[in-house]
Length: 91
View 1 (cartoon, rainbow, N blue to C red):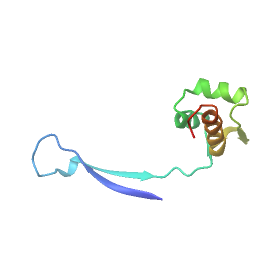
View 2 (cartoon, rainbow, N blue to C red):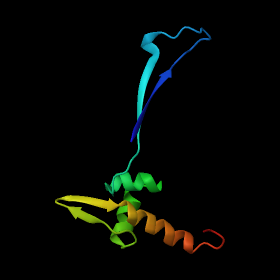
View 3 (cartoon, helix red, strand yellow):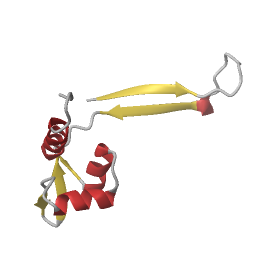
View 4 (cartoon, rainbow, N blue to C red):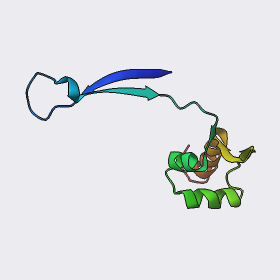
């Protein structure tokens, strides 16, 4: 699913919007099941190196699709669930 919106950029208080100051923005939901290492790290808010460390330690599972190293979204969700389960008061 995607949505398209127009963003009007103005630098003054003029009610007239020039055509060259209009951006068309398309926002799409990310419903992919497999992410690259960099995408998974970004989604967790960590660096690529730490993501590789977590993969090597078996903290997060990954799969290979041909030569590509991919991380299932479900593996990220399971990792976060395990982290929050060890913190008192967090559900």
